[in-house]
Image (cartoon, rainbow, N blue to C red):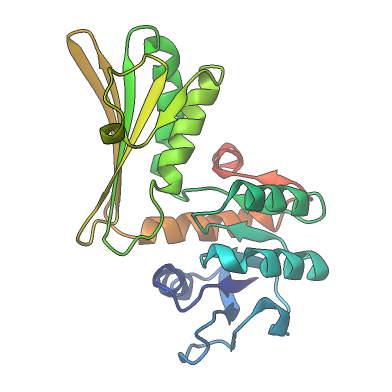
Length: 252
């Protein structure tokens, strides 16, 4: 039985993960970390990582970027692997995760969905084949309570496409502020916020007289919970290092 500490346990995703774990026989949540530690759970909840006294095998983090430094320090001090699924992290914070991974296993992905990560591989291949004559645009849609824009997944998709093309592309987020024709080296990234949209990402390859699109639509947050839990069970078997959904998929 894998013992999990859930960071952000009283947030929207935290509650989904807790409900998903409750249905499984191979893991259990033994403690939670959340600034709002007054909500009753089936496990003890601590307001910060430093206050957590419970022993566990792995951490799942779906909280807020402001928690990251303290959580990584806790993981390092206690030699506990961590799955970092929080979005909106800065480049400096991503570097922190990479540094921590030299001491204890770290799993980091902007999106925990198997489908999205399959989309990444398809997008990389399409970009290489179509790049000479096709423009690339990414449109992401999320609910009206999502704070960061563009989404971490949209940036991940853009980064993967750009990497496949030798990092020759530049990102454009705000076309209305620049009145000029679109340049071939651009990847446009647009954000939509409204209603209760769980998450939709579309990659548009627009060429001469034809249009190719790759689309992933999340129907519920449970797909992200399942991915994070499976990542945690995978991570406890690994040595120090930085892992991602590519590693998890390859292990199946």
